[in-house]
Length: 352
Image 1 (cartoon, rainbow, N blue to C red):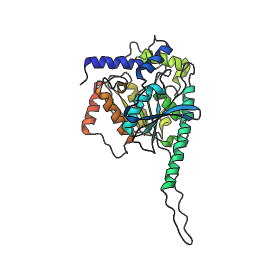
Image 2: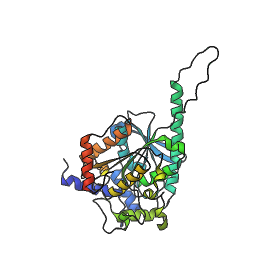
Image 3: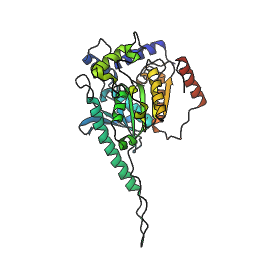
Image 4: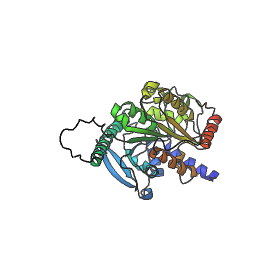
């Protein structure tokens, strides 16, 4: 059971992820690195530096992993902070719990490199990893095929579909906006290779018209509308904030057609919960599956405070199982459905 002291310590740590309106950018960046970087990774996870078309990335490999699946993790950090080093610990836990390799690309940050620099880097990295995974799948498929020895004529068989890549995209906070901008720019084949998208406390609308940014005194224990507004100001110029590549919640439903299933995990106490519900409605209109995993009494990015909150370990474990499971393996229990509905009711969110 978490004590009040545990919760206060968790909130203090998690605030390092948020760009305060008053903090200097370099101080903010140092704060994330100091709070979340670690030298030793958990449970024997191996970390190697790789290059994807000129974009460096960490490849985290757990002891046990599926060779035909990889997570492409886009870190948050209010568009201006965070790095592969500060996300290694969390992504290593995710790698273990999903039995999956994790790639963390090091994209350029605002304000030195405003939009679309980050998305350009992510697209470059994704294209390279996509090509590598597709080539590996083709090689594995060829190795499994047994040669046939026949005599005489043989009827021509239908051409087999070429094996594709199996990529999961995961992200948190502002990384969710970058993820959707990336997916909007993918080719049809690249998009087909993305089998699932996992969001942790996603930012989906940082436009100047967003109620979170225009409202007065909008905040929760960790995040505030003022923090999001400042991040948006540093990421792009004012009139561009309505761009769907900046604020994907502004996109029409047709832009999400053909997208893979989404799994969104967040805390009940977050100011972002209404945005996420609107996003779920957008996906429903596009006939895209979306699962909301809302944790009672939890705050923004609670998964990153595992030394203080018992729920952190359980939440990451659940996300890992969601990534690794086959579609037919899991069905939400009646107890989970009831708990989810109670949370929605408490927050005045109507379930479709």
